[in-house]
Image (cartoon, rainbow, N blue to C red; front, top):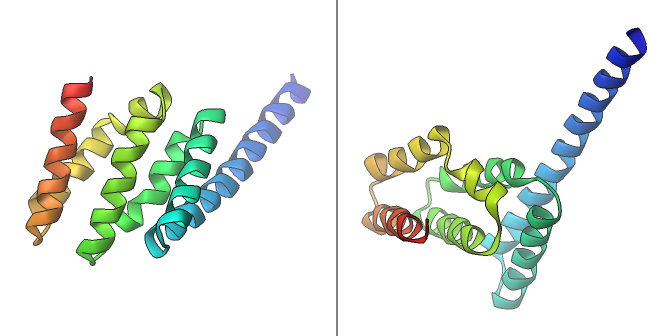
Length: 135
């Protein structure tokens, strides 16, 4: 029994370490997309999609998007929403399920209610309408 508990703890520690590494990878890829030119954006996005599709890392991708979505800059928020919309279109079920949680829907609704920039509000609402039609 003790060996099983130790192995379970090691598994959790390994998963936590992997989660931190993956989150850093996503944060770096998002930063590249927010601050780069067209071809670099495309390359970083392809890497993100590959990470999400190849392993169950949807949660880490969304966590990495939280700060850009909460940014004081409307331009950063719009870019982050574009990344989010593209991820929904290019990833699979794991990402959709993670995004569809009450927590994430509440975050997006809060953005609509609290943003001062009408472009951000319209982008969030448009994505939600698009998602509703897709699913």
